Length: 315
Length: 318
Image 1 (cartoon, rainbow over the protein chains, first blue to last red):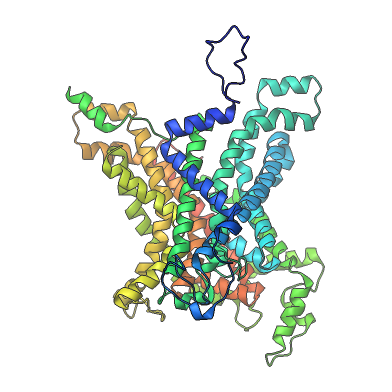
Image 2 (image 1 turned 30 degrees about the horizontal axis):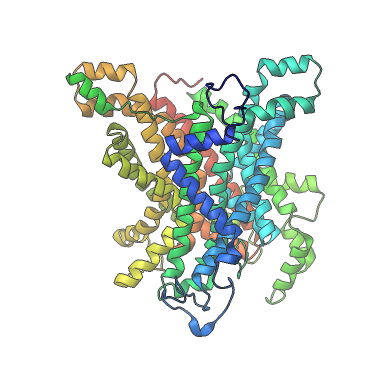
């Protein structure tokens, strides 16, 4: 893929190597954003752990074995066991699978909702936009967690319910960003040209606007996925998320296990560390991605610091 | 200023209407079988509760538009948020009991997060790419990545293992024992404040870096002013507006955080009330709390808007 433009009989053998978008992206990621690349590696490990959980985990996530309960780490149980004698490592590994499923499913669904609301309100504007925006305003008045726990109390606990509720919350909240980008994209000449040529509205939205707001959509995706994983963990911690015995990292910190954590702190320590590392990894990867994909959003970086300024002054 | 305030409050009306509609629809979304379930739960109690009486308590006994108007009228004309389904206590009374706890927790958390975020953010910016900057940035990213419920759990577990210390379960009132009261709130507010500080810290650093490149900062340096004066007087105030904005955006996160932290540290605040109400499916309490939380967020946003004028005199309220 990297050398696709270099054919043997080409006269332009010295032309710069034109790489595909993804190849270029990854090369720049590793060259310019080492921290982001590190985050990317964390994301990859999470993804692979989730996919191959069945192969990697030494035990099942709900293999109850009361004789072996609350054991410290050993060769047999690398991270020890919990109050029901379940291997903590296996539960962590299956927990990664759960986080990946919930994270991806809810984020993809939320992006669809954001895009649907954002692109239509941004493109059509007018009364429809005004009413939808006041609705989004009204929605944003309530803290995310409050909406989530109230919604879960209505739809009931369970993985798919949680995914839908998370998607709805993050989807509505994220629609503003897509709307803003759509308004900016709408004003482009080529959109008007396509309109003048008689392209249908659907074609305009899908072929001319959507490709041009992909950068914010991808950025929204990476920033949301960490928030979604954290929100699921919080809900499960509060006992309103995915019900036990599912090995949700947040759920592992809550419920009946809490009284045993004084005896076996590993039960609480490990899931929290995993969550922190994963959220950290996704965040730095997302930041790097934002910088690479959308230079306009770059924060105050560079090497132009006051230190240097002072040195210049003294010269 | 006054005209601006009136305009701003009028602009809130559609938002409030949609917010109340959302809360209202939430209650209409309760599936019928949950009401049956609630009736069966009630059978254990001594009171006679039927489906009809429960529907009446939830306001489900009249046509839907009447329900909304009656509910809105009760709230805005009579200040009546309804009554708890299980107890006969008015919701407003229950909320008023819990409000001071959440308020104190939030206020201390805000103070702590600002004490942490602002100096570290400024320091990180003026000593960019030094060890201190890296430490500061690590702290801020930890503030974002560490889940507050985990940090809270750790703060409860480890001191108990190491020193046998555990947070007191009984609420100590400030008037009786001020020091004991502060001691009780300090751990939860640090946990909550830390998770708030990360974003503020990053924003503070980014804005300071941007402001420090401005011409008027160069002028200030050229005048031979001391670093302290340049940073505090010339740079900081100008860097504050986006920081205040992002801080305002965090108020809903703060309120969400109180639900979690109150649960861990067994503080009888609004979050705890909400959580109990959800467990017991006490929907009038849930809607009442949502209304009050919504209003708090709106007022906080208004205050954030008003603070811009103080920070930047160029911004006039029109």
